[in-house]
Image (cartoon, rainbow, N blue to C red; front, top):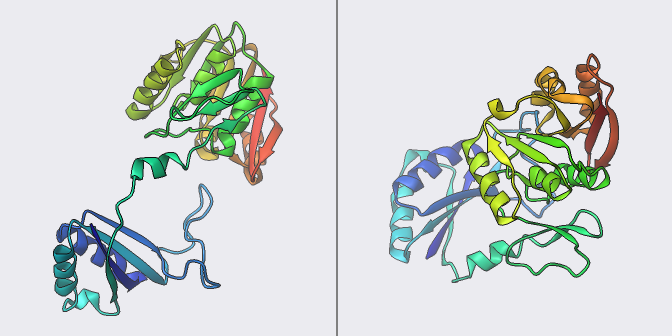
Amino acid sequence: MFELRLLCPANRVDQVSDALEALSALSVSVEDADAGTQSERALFGEPGLPASAPGWARSRVLALFAGEAAAREAASLLLPQDFFSGCAVQAIAPVPEQDWVRLTQAQFAPVAITPSFWIVPSWHGVPAQATRVIRLDPGLAFGTGTHPTTRMCLRWIAANPPAGQRVLDYGCGSGILAIGAALHGAASVDAVDIDPAAITSTQANAAANGVRLLAGPPERAQGGYGTVLANILAAPLTVLAPLLCGHLAPGGALVLAGVLERQTRQLQQAYAPYLPLQVTDSEDGWALLTGRR
């Protein structure tokens, strides 16, 4: 395979990328041409906030082609185009053969939730100190254990085992929280999500971990639960306040994540008519909010 490297101003990136796809590029990616220098800057904002800019002032566009001839033909066809004005061809170079599966797997190592509770990808051995393990590989749905919000929820489950309880995981993603609850003794677990891919992922991950749970759309959630878990984002959590609190059995615990520390007051106000929320954990700017009915 060969890579065609282009330098483009922000206002040319979309047109050039579309043209490369039309020219049979296997893939097209865009990165900050000033990355690693003092001119590097973040492009994306925090969750719920708009991006600081629509693109980098100087972008490097990388297109992958099956062979050198295809890459050179694409470059020759782009050069005379009006929309290529201000752009430049930086290089056409071979891409070394690599074991991409192994490289991808190397990014995901076992994650310790507590000294004895771990998340371990299927290709890794289980650490000797792990007595409770979730086997989970990266997939289409959110939740691999690497994000602070997931870790905080799992830490809470480990510290407050829902033994014998009905548990609801609302917005289950990969099903990691539902599986964690099942491993900590939940009598039954309902895992719900609006995304069909998340439901499929949760069912597959539950089977891989040998736990029983019911996964489906939000309508599956019925009645009261001893623990309700929701790791989403602040905006939907605010809207869902009456629904989530309505699923809490008397004495039941509500666990909310996906909330930035600066958003905690917003959530506390939204849930105040139903129950008081406290910040019980925080990590890397994210907060865990919990309350009991």
